[in-house]
Length: 104
Image 1 (tube, rainbow, N blue to C red):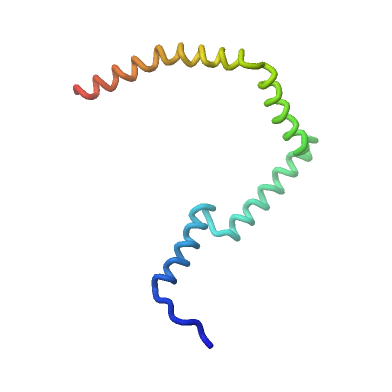
Image 2: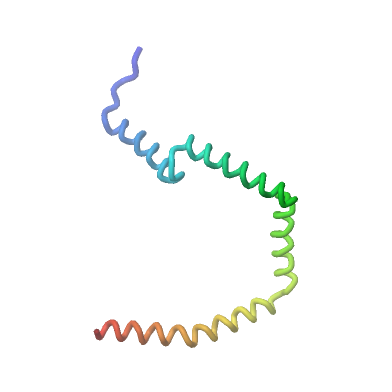
């Protein structure tokens, strides 16, 4: 027994789902997988030539965040001070530019 006719809306929905996936991936799923496989192979060869492993990358990232945590809130205080100093210059210039554009 054949499937009942569901009309053009059903067909369009399945096409739009395919289109959404393709739009998300930037290409068809098969081509995306092939591209990722080739890039992974090239990156693996380069990392091997540099005697660098993914574990070392993960360790470096983890160590980076641990050091930031160990700095404590003093580092955030410095960043906050730089932010305020920059805002004291940038915000008035921004407001002045908007006023000048509004008048002109």
